[in-house]
Length: 465
Image (cartoon, rainbow, N blue to C red):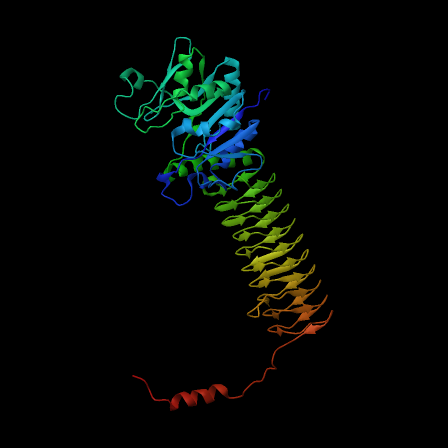
């Protein structure tokens, strides 16, 4: 922007209708706190500075991006009071003012409002919209020249005339102002109302009384200024935000087979030609490469997937799966798990805090925790690393080209050298040298006639009625 605006975001409301101990602005919306959405839109729109006005409890500390200023509205004295709390950050140039509980507001809408404001040469410009049912919204009364004469509130009977009630153009609560004119007018807004508060819309009447031009900029999509006052409205807004996220990914070359059953956070990145199967949930700082197939019935949280990874019916959190690897079905990869290129974690496999080498396979029914496994190794069914001695965790080291047979337990700390083997049913407590076979089980002995002897013992037992 030629004249980059200061953006003031009002976020000091208590949000009592949320019925929550969590401040309303910190309720999660597609992976981000609600306040993060309008902040991101303002930054994307080219704001020179963003000022968030919070409450005296400073609940928003630590939840805003670097460079965003948090100021405090010391008392709940209305929307005008919120802007006054940011007065020291408001310069003579353009100022945008909006609520923090309109997370769907877009950068394009904010940039469009500033553009219309500057083109009109107005002291103030109101973002307006047409609603089929404008109940509860302030009606925008225009003059013959199209300028805004006033905004009429309709919260109580008698606030507006019958003619004004028939107006379907309403105030969205988003404004552009000349900074100096805004502060001058706010200083003259009274508190003669039921709540004894300073109402920001009253600034429009003050400016109009001064002979200043007050303009309106109408947007076609009213959903961009949908507010959130309770959890019902939060769910409604979340559905629209999720639809936007899905559409953005699909237009970038991602296939989402069933968007209605798929959840993708705003923070997730997905490469082209990746396919997201139904009932899949992608959360947090997840990064997915190209040509992957994720799902169905899969959850991926804070995880990195390389190119051409396949993950059906599995749960992954805080891990990394590199190119060409496969996970599942019914696998659980926990934080610190790393599957290198072409590796496999198969059916009913759990891996935690372990480095699995390239092309190594953990096919099924195994738990691998706190282990380092070399490349081209195969861990047989029911291979278990016993990593906890009741006090501390110990690591297991398994070399390259190792073959463990089924039902092998590795009691850490223990090392299997390169090309080592284990016998089925072994409990390995000592290191196995490279190329050696480790067998740790008692020799089998067969007791002849056991079935007949047992039958005789059973016959001697008293019969139970």
